[in-house]
Image 1 (cartoon, rainbow, N blue to C red):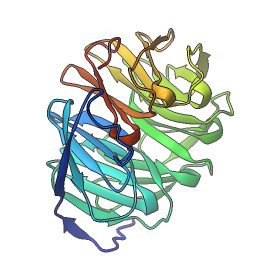
Image 2 (cartoon, one colour):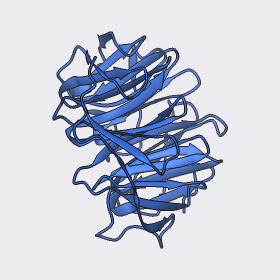
Image 3 (cartoon, helix red, strand yellow):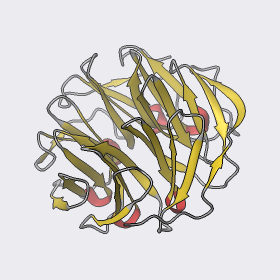
Amino acid sequence: MLNVRRGMKRFALCLALLLFAGACGGGGDDDPNFFAVDFANDAFVMVGGDYAIANSADGEVFLLQAINCCGFLETVAFGDGLWFTAGSDGVVLTSTDTANWFVQFLNTGRTLRGAAYGKGTYVLVGEDGIAFSSSNAGAWADEDSGTNDTLEDVVFGLDRFVAVGDDGAVVTSDDGRIWDIQSSGTSADLLAVTRGVARFVAVGRDGIVMSSLNGVDWQFEQSPVTDDLEDVTYALSVGLFVAVGHHGAIITSPDGLDWTERDSGTSRKLYGVAFGQDLFVAVGENAVIRNSGDGVEWF
């Protein structure tokens, strides 16, 4: 069991500025890139370059916070009352309130790219197939994912963890500790994965979209775009999958099978998307933020 912490301390976050959704907010060349966003426990949290973390109660106005360090955060998730985010050089930060964060570095110099929680277990995956599990997000165990391909994302759903990555890599686990290699049927990089009511959806390079009923058997779906798709989410109350990517690409689907391109109103790269408070929130390059209530009209 790993519990390696380098320079472990409590960081007091400095309030920097407000970021607003829509054309008038974000988008400046000096604004940080935000690579991931999630919603849980009545809050949105997005993370990105320069260890930037921003939180919001409504998904429209974000309070940007700063940590005096020089790396980047790639992923953010929530489980059992605890937010956790991870990124370059094996950094992991945890918080119970989205304002005060505790930092540790895992025993790896590689970047952590995906995070998920399920069955009482926190899971992180990343470069060169690294995988970690923890029961408390404090002490982490180094697991064997079975692949050396970089794992870009991981999700928990339908009673299992599913991670996807470069060269079409897919690995699954019932407990976050023992992983099995699956065949996706593609060599394209899969950059993100989510699950709907009864289906997993993975997206990636050149607009690729794939779906699976169990995380093991995958099929190709017709994509309306050729832009790289960086993230995908599912909104249960709306009954809609939304995927986002480069050049402001946004595509939606009610079932993960039939997809429609939408106008995001931006040409900047969108790296992350989440749903909460009856609102889709997409974030990306130079702090761009786009909102939608239905996944169709974006502002």
